[in-house]
Length: 290
Length: 345
Image 1 (spheres, rainbow over the protein chains, first blue to last red):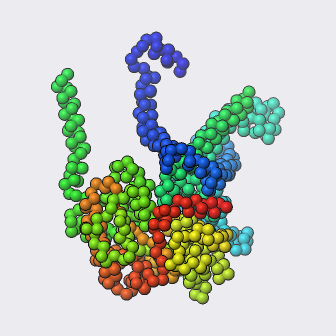
Image 2: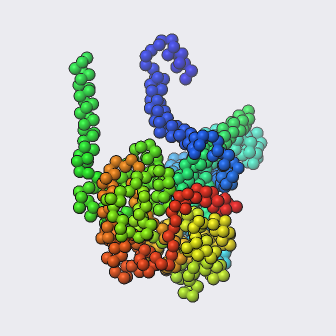
Image 3: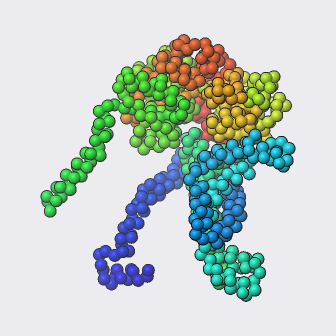
C-alpha cells in the first residue's frame, strides 16, 4: 500500500491504479456533497439564520419548552434499546459464529431476511399482538400469568420491544463478523494455561469481540436516535422522541427554524458520542491485545 | 478533428431531443398537478372532480401526495410542481400566514352559495369532517354512551382508556368542551385550562398517532371510547364493526383547496377549483365519502338518508362547532411546545 504513492512520484506516469480509484471515488463524493452535505448545511444554516440571525433557537431549546426533556427521553430510549440488543445478540452471535456451511448460511439468511419487512409494517404487527384482546394478552390470561388483560401498548416496554426487533440485525451482523475473526488457537492457548471458562471468556473471548460490540452498539444507538414510527404507534404518554417532534414541527406546524435547531442538536450529540465512544473503544481493544 | 466534434455535438442534440420528446408531447395536451392526502379522499376527488373536469375541459389531472413540508420547500425554492393542493384548514391558514399561497380568483370561482367562512382570501374549504365521540358498542352499554366530552372524561361512567390524538390540534378544543366551555366561547383557546382538563384523565388516555389507529383501537376494544373522525368509523360501522359515533359537540374540521405561490398553471388551477365547487360535483363527492359539501346547493341534491351522515348537513351542523384555523395558524407552534412539555411533565 505504501509503495504506491512513491511509484507515482518516481515515474510520474499519467495513469495509475490509485488515480483510477480516486476518480471512481470522486463520483460518489460529489453525489454526497450535493445531495447530503449541502442540504444538511442548509438545515444548520436555517437554525441560526431564521427567524432572525443569532443563536435564539438554541437558547430557546436549552432554557425553555420541552426540548431538553425530549432529547433526554430520546437518549434514554436509545440507551435501553442498545443495551437490550447487545444482551440478546451476544449469545446468538457467539453461537452463530461457530457454525459453518449450510447452518451458517441459514442463520445469516434468517437475520438478513428480517430486514426485508419495513419498520412501519412491523410496528403495526406489534400493535396487533399487544392489543388488549390480542394474542399476547390472550396467552397471558390463558396461562394464568395475568388475571385480566394487561396494558402493554402505550408503554415504554412496548416501544423497546418494537425497536429491538427492528434493530437486532444491526447488532448481530457486526458481532458475528468480529467473533468469526477470533483465532481459536488463542482460546486453546488460554485453556492450556489453565484458565477456567469464565476467565477464558472475560480475559480472551470478550476483549477480542469488542470491535464487534463497538460497531454494533454505535449502529444501533445512532439508528435508535432517529426512530419515529415505532414510538409513535406503540408509545403512550411520556413518550416523545426527537424525530417525532421534528416531524410535527416540520410537517404540521411548519416551524422550520426550531425543527432545524433540534435536528442540529441531535446531529451534534450523535457526533460527540460517536467520537468519544470511538476513543474509549480503541483504548479498550489495544489494552486487551497488549 | 472538426467533423468528429460536430458529430458528437449532433449526437448530443439528437439525444436531448429524444429525451425531451415526452415533455413536448405532454405540453400539447394540457395537464395540472393536484396534490392530496391520497387514499379514499383522492378516490372520491377522482370520481367527483377529476374525471368530469377532464371530460369537460380536456385538461388532464396528474395525482400526487401533498407532503406539507414539500410544499413549503417548493415555494421557497421557486420550483413549484403542484398547481392545486388539498390541505387541512389550519395548515392552509398557516401557509397563507407565511405567504406561501396564491390569492384565489373569486372572479372565476363562484362563492355565493358557499357556507359561511368557506371562502378565504387564499384558501377555500371544500369539505367538512367531524372530530367526534365514538365508542365500541360491545363494551359501552347504551345507557353509558357519552353524549358530551365531559361524559367521555367521566372515568366513573365506564372504565378503560380514552383514545385521543397525540397533538394539541383539536385535542385542546375537546378538553375545553369537556371542562364546560360553551361551544361559542372556545376561541381564543385557554391552553392552561385545556391542559388542566386533560390532567384529570392523564393516566387513562390512549394516545393514538394517526386516523387509521384511532379507528382500529375502538373497533378492537383497546379503548371503550374516544375521539375519531366520522369518516374513519363510518364504513366499519356500515360493515358491521362494533363501533358507533354521533355528532353532538363535534369539532368540525375542513379540507381546503389552495394554489401554491408560483404555481405554473395558475389559470387552470382556478378553473379546476371553480369546477369542483359547483353543486353537482360537490354532491357527487359527498355520495362516495361521508364528508359534507361546503356548497349549500349541493345539500339540496342529496337525499335525507345521506344528509343524516354528513357533518355539514343543516341538522348535524347545529350540534357542533367549526375549528378556528386562524387561531391555530398564529398559535400552533407555541401551543405544540406547551402540549409537549405537558406530555413529558
